[in-house]
Structures are given as structure tokens and as C-alpha cells.
Image (cartoon, rainbow, N blue to C red; front, side, top):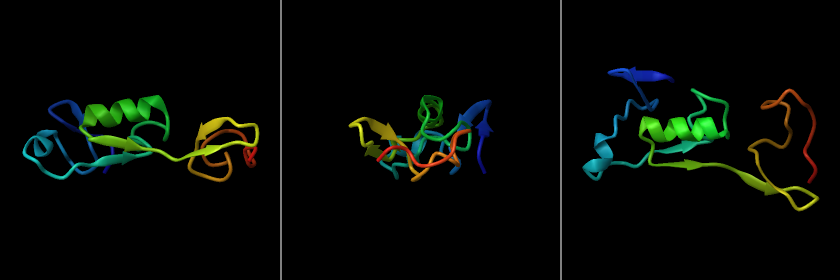
Length: 89
């Protein structure tokens, strides 16, 4: 379940509240940020992941044909933008 709250504070989908890491517990990584609470691979998604207690964030990168680094998971922009088609590879 996404967008959970505990005492008015956003928590991870696992229900993690920050205490497990302090006791040497499992470290959770937010894949593409906290994408259940904000659009994936955006600064707000990673900021919310940090606020929710995730230990880190993971994102996919690639280099376009003109040498620019981009953060994108898919081979096209169709699912995550209002555009369509492949980005320049």
C-alpha cells in the first residue's frame, strides 16, 4: 500500500518507520524513488523516499545519441510523459 502515514508522517510501502535501520536492520532502497507518492524518477519522488525512511534510491540511466545522460527506465517516453516514442539513442 502506498502513501501510508504513521502519526501524520509519510512512511514507506513496507511500513518502515526509520527505527529498523538504527538497529542494524534491513536497508530498503526506493526503486525510481517513492513512485507511489510522486512521479517516478523525479526529485519529489526521491525527497519523499528520504522522508519516508528509505536508506537509498535507485534509478536507471542511459546516454543519448548526442552524449547527454538521462534518467529513464523505459525504452520510450510513452508511459512517463505526455510525449511518445523513443528518446535519441
